[in-house]
Image 1: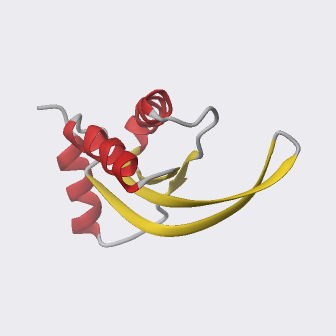
Image 2 (image 1 turned 135 degrees about the vertical axis):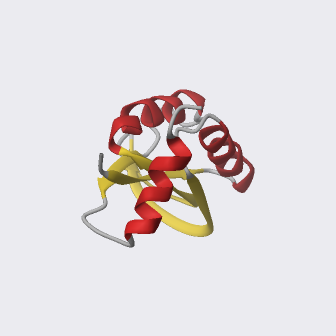
Length: 106
């Protein structure tokens, strides 16, 4: 079972905290890191936009990626939220095992 990082953005710190808490409490993620202060430039509906956003990085397992993406997307305030998963190629084996342990069914 491989570990993954799920990267998402949110419009406010409060929403990022809410999304992160929901994911960790549901054991869809072992951990949520919240990084405020990101500036985004992007195209939306034909217009170049810019916005202050908050980055949310969650650690999960490959088996839970789809469920986590679905949960974040449905709870998000954006019409088309950025929620993407990246596989973790390698890392501290103890940490990777911790991710598996904390997302295992109880």
